[in-house]
Image (cartoon, rainbow, N blue to C red; front, side, top):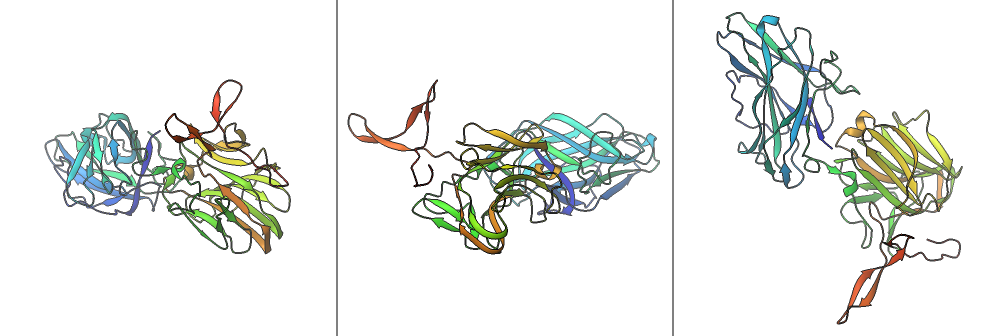
Length: 428
């Protein structure tokens, strides 16, 4: 998959002192955030040229958040921005320079796209201009490094007449700008990198915790949520305080990834509306996907909410065996809600075209409970986030006892499986 950044009108997190592209005119001062989600009102940067010779004009720079981890950025880049020329005779073509800074410094870690120049003249009606599959240089990115994208134009006319080039950035529409699209004030421009996966945002599948020694560093809990030490799980009650187990980092993405967990059992008791849920969303603004269990009805509901509401959720009766595992998954532009009895065989319960906001690299996940009044008599218990438990035994190697996973015959192969125990009412 590709990692997408957007040309926002939010302030740049850091601005390098030097403009690195080969710009004849580099007086433009625009410096914005190359963000992992669209942000800010639609804005323009316009610069005129009057030179008799062909020359290049910078319109703005966009700087990314810091890299989260060490890795190699390579492959290709695609990009699309809104642009317009004041006259056909201007004969402007797009010019782009991309590089990586060494942390928050003016030192270049490596160049990605070296003064790339397009071949199509800018239109006199503002519209998207895209380039695809442009090979980039390979850069060994370090934690804290930033991508810098410099956008502008090359004036290929040779007259003294003054012509102006304008680029559009910002906007938060639910559709990204496409080549030749004219909605430049609502549809945000963007830049994709084919090889940036995991460098600037971690896939949601990387939130892994078996809770064997507590909740570790990936989660924080509140409102009565607790670590069940004997069973090595997390108990999430349902009460009016919205108890929960929430990922400590807002910076994951689900595109091309998945996020699942074992719900050992759902809560019981509570008054009026009581539920337990797995929620994935960008911020606490009522936009989220959720798999919710209702204590009152005994149903699972698969929701895609905007403004805390989904007009057409999918609902089915909860089965503690068939629905022991719950998963979110995104692939190929489709988002799925799934259930499984064993984290091996999954059943799709609902799917939708991936909403725009689910493509952002600013997501977090939490397991939460709620009750209008009172509280549940037993909590939901969460275990094995993005991991499958393995039962181990010790066997004699010929010289020592060594730990080995327990395997069972599936009918066609030996596979690793957990062992279940009887809790007087159910196998768990």
